[in-house]
Length: 75
Image (cartoon, rainbow, N blue to C red; front, side, top):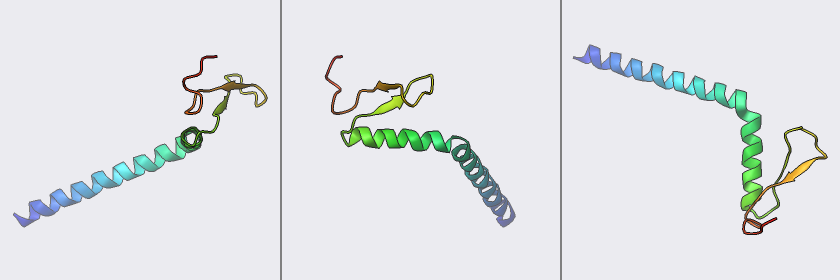
């Protein structure tokens, strides 16, 4: 009985290790995008104007985004 219990614990540890490795890989791949999204969300929640670059990627071309300070304003 004790032997099969140890086997279950070993399988559990292997699964947890695989999930941890997968999480680290996802953060490594998408880390910069996640960081930018969290930064944008925290600025919006603080009431600051949220501006993101448009699809062309030009820094000088910005599009206005709705945030908590202007969500009811129609443009």
